[in-house]
Image (cartoon, rainbow, N blue to C red; front, side, top):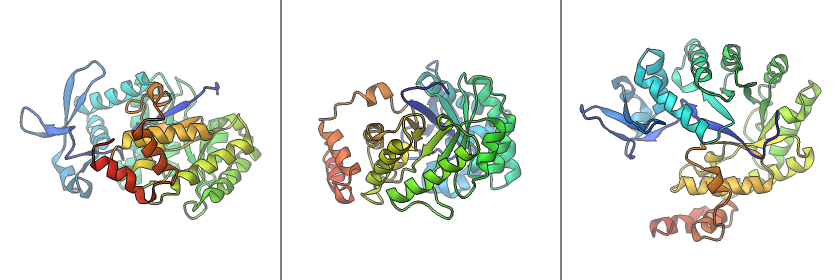
Amino acid sequence: MKKKEFIVIGENVHTTRVVLRSGKLVTTTPGGEEAVRYTTAAGETRYLIIPEDLKKRQDYEEGRVKHVLIAVRAAMAGDEEGAQYLRSLIEKQVRAGADFLDVNVDEISVRLSEQIAAMRWLVGFVEAIAPIPLSVDSSNLDIIRAGLEACRGKAGRPLLNSACLERIDALDTAVERKLPVIVTAAGESGMPQNAAERVANASRMVDAALSKGIALEDLFLDVLVFPISVDSQYGNQCLDAIRELRQKYGGAIHITGGISNVSFGLPCRKLINEVFLNLAVEAGADSGIVDPVANDLNKVFTADKQSQPYQLAQDMLLGRDRNCKSFLRAYRLGAL
């Protein structure tokens, strides 16, 4: 792979993505139907109708609308609005500087056959539009393989997302197809509990990949980012693992992670994500699974680090704000 200062794996073509029913994007069309309002890359306002059958799902009843899932289902059925919605997501991420587009269909159905069919369809749809390669992502290796089989690789080699100790045979798929691969710090039977476990698990994956002939520059280490709202030390655990892995493997390997996970359950998520992205890069990360539309990297990396909002978010992410109390107090007072 061509070395780049920071590699963006765009996260939005993903059926787990939600918008809030109470948020500004869910509205009523001029015809009176509940819909997700969106703007195309050309600036046109359009509406993605929320189908009635999805309103019976638990996520909808709890206030969440899985907008990408709606669009994929609609587009696969031949609906132009669904296709236009996906096209808009893709074009905006490309314009914002994504280097890969992460595609995931796990939420489309509970049936494996339908998930595989959706992945094949989505890969073909995205590749026809995007001038950048895909990151084929799933919790099921059969779905990943189906997506990779559907890839023509016109814009470059796709990225396999992901391999871990629990499914180490994903490395064999990467070897067979000569692909770069995301390897995670997950254990054989659960998530890491601290920085040391992250490093140990990731190191075992790197050793296994190298033994199979995968080059260091084709490896992306996902150190696993967890919500800071759950444990005030999750940020430090992740950052410490990044530092140690960078020192251990040098500059050739890539270090990445799902940056937006850190802010789950908190207000001002954009601010938190951007501060954590800076901290991760300072620690040694050179990649991120991020939304480049919501997080303009030119602004992220030139942020005023002395501002009060930045300092409050940084203190929280570095474990200096127990239970996020100071950050949440500032939010309630309007200081953010």
